[in-house]
Amino acid sequence: MAWSVSGNVVIACNCDYGCPCNFNALPSHGTCEGGWIWTIDSGHVDGVALDGLCLALFAKWPGAIHAGGGRAIGYVDERATGAQRSALTALLRGEVGGPWGLFIKTYALAEPLTARFDMQLAGYGSRVRIGEAVDLELQTIRNPVTQAEVHPEVVLPEGLVVKRGSMAASKVFRVGEGLDFDHSGQYAAFGRFEYA
Image (cartoon, rainbow, N blue to C red; front, side, top):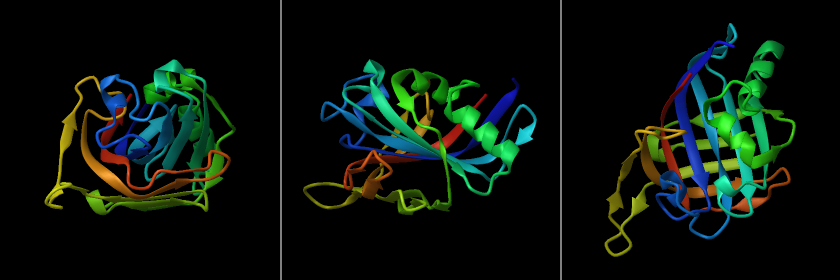
């Protein structure tokens, strides 16, 4: 199946800033609860154009992601046609590869839900709402002594989700729909992605 997608991804979880999982280390607090929201600028799956559409995945793992045993829920953009929803669902299920092809081995994925994505991508001021289930708002990280804003970045040549990401903090990060967590004030990031 021929496919490729590129665009922007916003990430948040319960880890401390930087998220050790980016470096194949254990999560900051023993468990992992977080997710990714992708906005596709350009892409297709098996000839079905996905330009301008969004998808998201949120999960809870009892330990590190690579240890498995997680539960996940996915969302596909309500603006998608039937064929586009099928293509976005194939991505989330890991049927074509990309980061989803690895993630699917670590959790049980419920049937993806169709939802409205309200995306305001503005770097450290980004805000995302997915229906009534997800609310994420980013902010810059602040130096704990001076309160000065800091803008760290990470370069991951073999990165699964991003190769280069800007590190941020979540001002708000809440997920409902059966996962039910609130990790406001923890790790967040954003960057470009290209998968094929």
